[in-house]
Length: 298
Image (cartoon, rainbow, N blue to C red):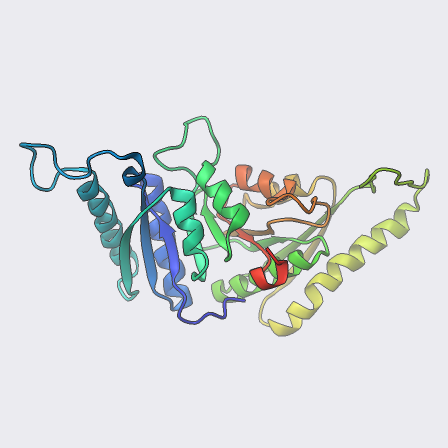
């Protein structure tokens, strides 16, 4: 899945403790993947036309530009404590946070973000930057939520779509790397109309419908199980809300993986309702996988 050998793990920082939490997670991810780590601070102030250097009479290391460079230096030092063997570079890049990080996703193996930064309101569950980057990234995005844990399974949401297959493959790779089991979750409800004029039967054969959903789940993991025979797999079929099922599974997981859009998402949506809900409510780190640009055509 992550075949670009020289691509770095990228993490965004803004000087917050949440961002440093993301840096620690990114350093571990880079070490596990044998990749370099790139730490990026988006420096929006040049767009505002404000003075960037020290004010008259202020210390030489004052000013907004110096503060940004200190923020990156602190993050680089923190990464070195966690994974001293990982090559680390830091950069202050002019621009708004979401735009800067989206540009970084074009050449990254993985982008790591904190759930909220300095700009987040205390009442929000997830920051707007994390939502925007997860919606449009050209590589998988890891949003660091909850406390990191070395035990527990990797959980992946399955719905039979092409993008779901990308997420399942990423999840198998993660489970193999972490030496843990994979729980593949497929939640189903009665069919609902998806467009004007849709006519649905008044009565369903519940057993036949369940068998079809079981087949969807089994077929979604079969090929990947052959590719990763060392990964124990549990298939979990749930009748109910997919988002609720994945959030519940996240309580004991070390990672949850979802596709950015699922089988039922409208083509114009960048982030499906399930992935959006899990992004806001998961109890564990969450990886969001999008179609490669060449496949998705976006």
